[in-house]
Length: 363
Image (cartoon, rainbow, N blue to C red; front, side):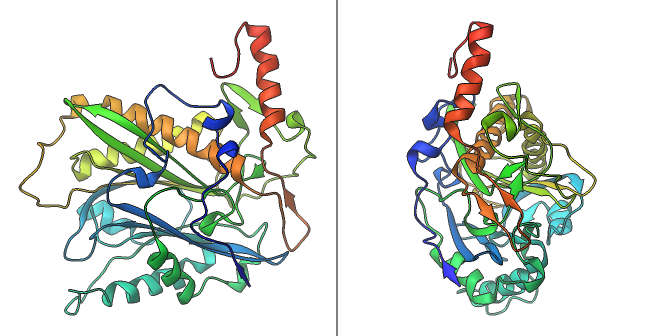
């Protein structure tokens, strides 16, 4: 089994913003990634053994989170055909008490067990008798032998222990290694925005695990594989999903974070999501200010949240584009192939449309 370097950043020229496909007007953080939110780290373990195995696990690790130090959180199920382990306790209590892990559908249960073991071993948790592991999943069965359940405890621990600040690897890494979306090879994508709220600047970051159906839309134009010179991908199986994880350092409560999680799922419509019967489309949002903290800025008023809603819509759209543009063309164990979205033909296509409309890409 070959493990890729979990910390290698994507090639800068491959990302949406670098090729002229920036989304929205808000500025990004320094890495345009979830890790731009202070105190949030990301790690991957990537498992590749062509053509049989293309899988892995991604860990989103907020500093200090644990059963005794939960963070405010909210979640939303756009279409609930999925196995979001830990979802009901988040919905009931509005609290996140573990890192968030993303993996393959049939590996989710082993990953949850490994996460529980890792949490119980953390300093200060010797007396813990209950813990709510949070594990999202997408079905990578088209391009990987999903029944082999290749993600093991050591892979989970490696992703957790290697989680770091700074640039985040995208595309065919971690829990995105074997995924497809919108007719193309997809995977992990991330983006961030700096947001003015109530007189101070806050950061919003998102990470997507993209594996959903529909027809890609870029700047309002539908884009099929044939449109960018690729062979047809064939019918998509009804086993897709998308996990969207959002984090912010804005002082929000669980109810407000649930509102943010809804917009994270709504944002998938911008890129053409079909929200099909077999798709598990979930948004999970958390804030990095611990529950019950007496000091710090006042809570944001609901009628001041619009800039944050705009930020999450824009960041999710760009994160999905990043996932498609940074992926690697992959062939699975039954000969199915999904191709990455090629930037040059895409830009030529959009430029042709812009010439007819009197606009240029990036304008």
